[in-house]
Amino acid sequence: MALAAFVIHSRPYRETSQLVEVFTQEQGRQSLVARGSRQPRSPLKGLLQPFVPLRLTFGGKGELKTLYSAEATGPAIRLTGTALYSGLYLNELIHYLLEIQTPFEEVFEVYETTLRKLAAGSALEPCLRNFEFYMLNVLGYGVDFTQDAETGAVVCAQGWYAYRPEAGFVALVRPEPGAYRGDWLHDLAELRLESAEVLAAAKRFSRTALAPYLEGRVLKSRALFIKGKRGSPSE
Image 1 (cartoon, rainbow, N blue to C red):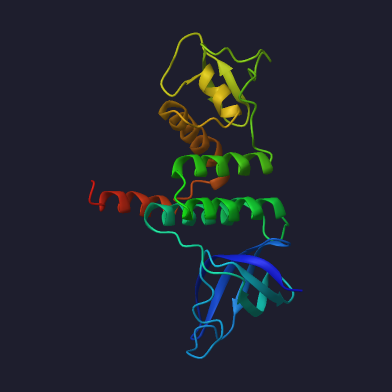
Image 2 (tube, rainbow, N blue to C red):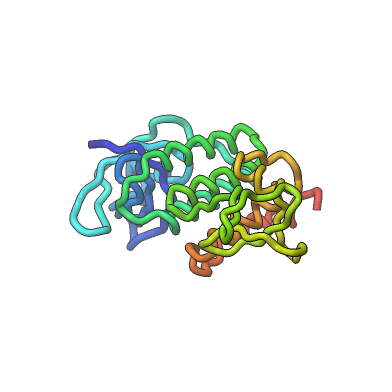
């Protein structure tokens, strides 16, 4: 059976092959060996790239399986500049957060939709924050933005709150560095990411909430994004 898939990451293997990490719609994340894929006449040469919608067949025992065939089902989703770094960031989240060989069909659909929004020129920050929030909820790491985690009281729009990892938001007597205003939290709950303040709060929350599950890894896409911004004509 051929499976819908995207390449998440690949690297050379031996003289003519590749080790390829893919995200499939039906069977989740898979590690494959693409034998002979770097040979000049290989039908796979140049095909196993990120952001190309594919249909794959593969098989074998154990975690590392053998790729049998691959074909593109459409043109590559064209990402450039900061949108490219954002797409690579999504790939790193898929790689590090999703358990291998576990189906996440809805995540696959949201992933592809987010890539296409980035390619179409949608604002980067809301796209990324929506995807991060979605991933946290799917994995069971989401929080209730509208309820005090200690008292159960509804978050007050004019109050200030601190985020307690793996617990939620708790009321503060007075604001402190990194605190969240109550009306921002209500906006986050509804994914209303229009204002600069709410977008900044969303980014800060995502970084904090995802950190334990990324286990201290330094994401290459973030470094590329920063390097790209420093090298842009506007900087």
